[in-house]
Image (cartoon, helix red, strand yellow):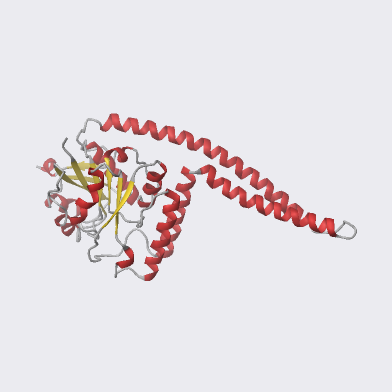
Length: 341
């Protein structure tokens, strides 16, 4: 059976770095019969799309305005599925990742050992990363591993490969980034996740995803908590309810202690009793919320299964992308260099 690989590149004003990125991509890979490139132009105001056509990029998906990296990523996944991709590789337009490592990145998928493969930048050995960034990456990846039940050492790496089956089951709801959510989703869906060491190229520009470490921490933490709560609602709410319950019982025990050990049994500390009652009521309400969220989560799983079946019906025939439609937005324009002639 022939294997088709599509390499997708989300872009935002990448006129300066795109030529080097395209030149770095492989033209032939053992075990792959067809390699095509897909550019997702996320509302660029420079010549990114025009330059992509001049460079011979096979497919161009363009948004009239910026939608965010996560939406650009999912638009590329939908477009690649419609194009009949068996394997999809995502890389950055700033040429951060070494294109020569793509064969190693997709090898676990071709050998049916993984559904999702993440490129491990071996951050601790990258000289351009500061000590603060290395430590934050280590802690962040550890948190994501706990939330996703995977062993990926570099959770924020955007250099990753995904099989067609896994792509059909992938649904990103975040507007910030896809890296954390897709890992947590893959882990909770019990997809086979692997990681391979990769090389990085010299830094060409600063990240456009966040303005600083504090903003990145805030948005990443929010994404992890939201996605984990979405996929493990009962556990998340139970832990929160347990904290309120322990606080309530501790304060209740404090009140009883002073009440029973006082000489006349009329000691104060009524505030402890009031707070204990409040905390216990809150714990009960939170637990009820967890049960309701668990029911909603069950419905979400049924909906995801239905959407996956719908995607299989829609993309099963490997139809080419319609020139003016994607599964993400009807306003996006999809063209190929051939369409321009």
